[in-house]
Image (tube, rainbow, N blue to C red; front, side, top):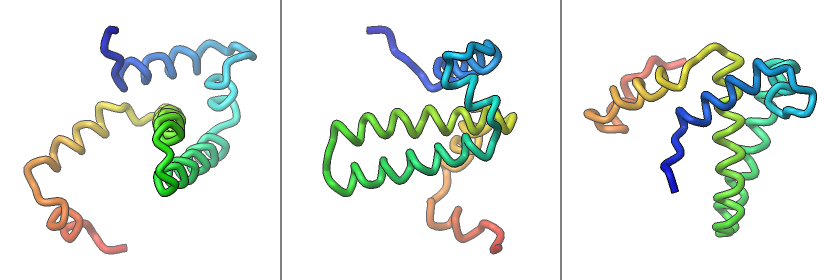
Length: 107
């Protein structure tokens, strides 16, 4: 099996968003805008947490896939490329997560 990456999924999301296909969930989410996409992202986050707490590994896998997909849709609608998020994560790898969080502006 060839390795599938988040970049691959980001590309698919971008292509389907532009397709205008009435049968495409991605195209529909993009058409509905950030409010609907963010709502779906939140719903999937909650469902992922529930699966984790229940210890249901198969549900956790499935809900995690839904969560990542909807996260990429939200990024896409917002005009934020995945590469920006990955750069941010990379910049944090040399620091302690505790000190990095403490250095964030309060607000």
